[in-house]
Image 1 (tube, rainbow over the protein chains, first blue to last red):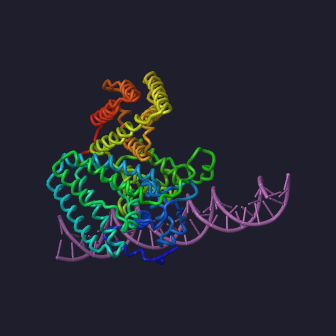
Image 2 (spheres, rainbow over the protein chains, first blue to last red; image 1 turned 60 degrees about the horizontal axis):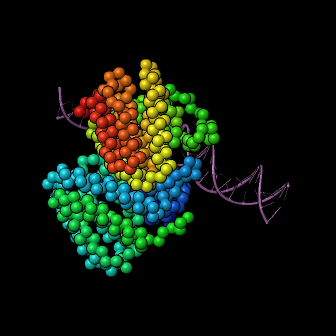
Image 3 (cartoon, rainbow over the protein chains, first blue to last red; image 1 turned 30 degrees about the vertical axis):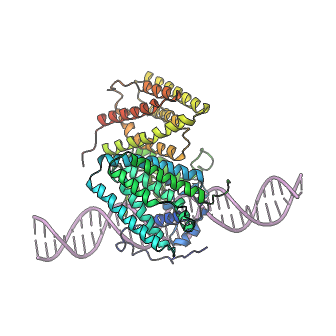
Length: 247
Length: 247
DNA sequence: CAATAGGAAATTTTCGAAAGAAATTGAACC
DNA sequence: GGTTCAATTTCTTTCGAAAATTTCCTATTG
């Protein structure tokens, strides 16, 4: 409905201005991913090429390439000759994503703790601090709910959890963790927005602290705390989400 | 060099003849994947669009879509405006793939053993039997080395390992296992071809038997045997492969 | 001789239109 | 009333050419 087409022909800039994009295919990928994760594109709904073309001011090729990639990442579904659709949300998928994430990150955390050096530790402490500052600022301004703050908060949260496993030494594990982070974000974000009011007393900061402390002292407990942390989040989401009908 | 272009315009069949393809993008994906895994396309080498167009008789769009997908699966690399290349092979990547595979499949196997029903068990026994028959046939005809036999063997092998984890209940875990299977196949295949002569006495059949037995009696040992099985393969590959120079 | 600018060639990327399938509509028929 | 079939419409998929960018080569300069 709110199709804010950006006219079409502003493509020759891209090159050196921004830090990265480089290619329209990449732009399409980023924007689609953002819109799917944020819920701007409704889960389950078909993605009509013509509509996307309007919405993003791009043509078929880059859009299709982006969709193909998103399909590999489980954010988009596609059927042979009847196009793409936003991957639906469901309890089962969320649980699967959560448990898989725990599997991956537990191993990555263990490995990080084994070989972790000073820089790794410093990275964790720094990320934790940044997260704390943001959380504090957040709670101070809890009156006005800005999507901007939400995004900043989530970014710090991501950075903290990534710092924990950063030293695992496996590119694959890190990639998988990233992917699962994005997938689960689809479930987290809408929930966070709605829960500003009826917060069921959870001290997330304390949980982070606990994970960090155990990690720094190289205790296997860290893995357990991390898993708990994710499972708790999953439970809250499951409870406070209005799930689509059983189908 | 050996570019066997299939002329160009035979696209209207696809529809109902074969069991699946449906779309040229899918065809491109399948063929490219096969050629990368089999080594028909050399690791590390750039993939020139024009050349691929010739080779497969397809045009840019489906090829690029396929490459995008293969990039997500770590079989292809791509840089902003300078195209694609076959992902290189290296000891580190192989080890990472192997260990990640062990992590994923260990968990999947545990879960399968927990909930596994009769059909699951039957599937394992059946796959094992089929694998044994093929292996026997293989060893009988060990004089003539046919790529066809190789492929059949690998297929049965895949089916057996998949049967073990089939009941894990996690679509994600199964997908990841499939992906890692393909990735590691890049390292296995060339090695298998070359090793027909100097076989260092390894009873793979016995290893499979051991894994299956432990699995059916729901013993945690199964997980250990499976990991050993993969690690042993990795070691043999590491030893008998001529690795690309350190760069 | 090294370094650099300029320009030609090669290559990737994007577009818009054409071709191909599926969904939809509606009319004719049981 | 409900079904089937064909025409129409909608949508996806593919192509080939145009645009943008990198790479390679060469001549010029310090």
